[in-house]
Length: 143
Image (cartoon, rainbow, N blue to C red):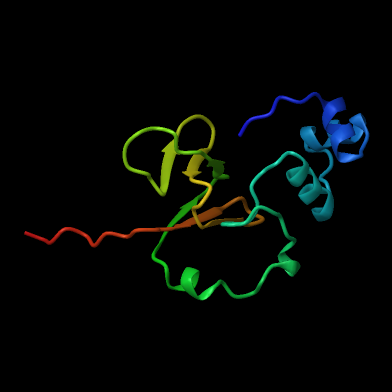
């Protein structure tokens, strides 16, 4: 998902000033958590894995659903931020739960809208991303 909005348009969308947006983009200031979630919602960014809305960590359920807790997962840890892209599957051929790409400045995890995934970044910048395997296949037998 990519949107090309001017700082003024983003300010109108989120109820802030253009100067505030400029400070956010330059890294001189960060939005508080509630404002950041408002920005994500207004931009139509997908929420938590399998959901359409964003919640603050203290509003999220502390335990994953039973099915999600039992799902096999792939976990990726990187010393830099991992970008996440939600992609609609329009090509013919098999549906891929997730793809991990290393292009440009940051690695990218590409998931489908129905994928269950999560991401955390530590204060030191280490990022951990996970994605549940929807239809896990057993590994091939060793020969």
